[in-house]
Length: 260
Image (tube, rainbow, N blue to C red):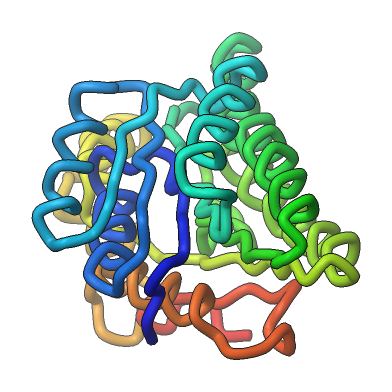
């Protein structure tokens, strides 16, 4: 499972799941671009990867901004002679009942999750096509790409949309040796999830302990959170799979929540 010489872009990689994916790629020999809104944090993460003995760079990128995405991807391709792997990971969460969900929040969620995935995909696919060596695109979806939860109308909609995008990319990219898959984690204990616990407790009128046990983890087989390492290993599996037999698929990593 080596990535020696491969160049990868991981969005939203200055922290959380994205950072662990980037570090995992770096340990396997990939050159990694940390694309994030927070350039200082992206450069710090890049320095941590460089310390592993591989090349890394921080890229300031608002994934919903077409100019920033195109410029950032072009800069990576120019430095490393192309883009071999894209991990579309950037995302946020806004929790509210539908009746209280503002249009501004709805648009913000879809812009980051869906517009961002589209823009980074398009920019990277152009380089993957022109290089002649293809590539792989991996979307960080969610069990919410398969199921729904209350209070998350925009998030569930966006994560379902990513699964559709992954399938279209697999079909269009095949003749150019570009494959695409989606990783669907369960709840991962990151700051994004930690923020949801009191929000859901307030909206549902239950304790934070009950949110964890009876909302977030109730459908797992063992009551355990998925870890950032779990997700990173699943991404690595897709990135290093030896053929294009694995494309247009989703891999659920969730302690048994949603069994296909």
